[in-house]
Image (cartoon, rainbow, N blue to C red; front, top):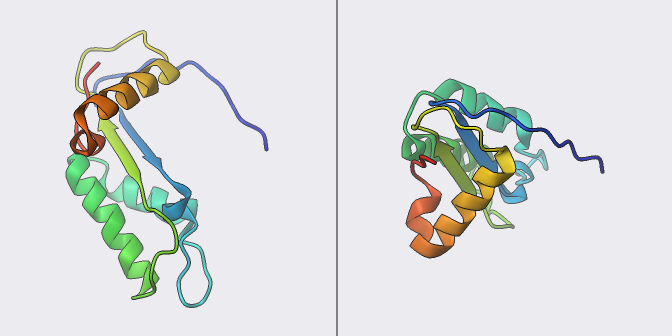
Length: 116
């Protein structure tokens, strides 16, 4: 597997969505995966909504796709919208900050807003 690494400038309003494989790889009765493309479609359609509303939209789309089939893996989402001024922080620094804050604050922070 090849991984890409890059530094990006985080701008106010940028959206970060991280999901576990339980979202992307969940299968319906026809053994089709939800997939990255469906996830991206929901994100594109609802990217202007709050992190909580986007989470709801994604999980609703997943449940609808499953059509009553049980999920066979965890379904974890981390959604953050950056509200502050433009930052020179790298993506990896932001992820570390979010994860540390999540460990300190508990699950309530995992779906919400984050401003570095």
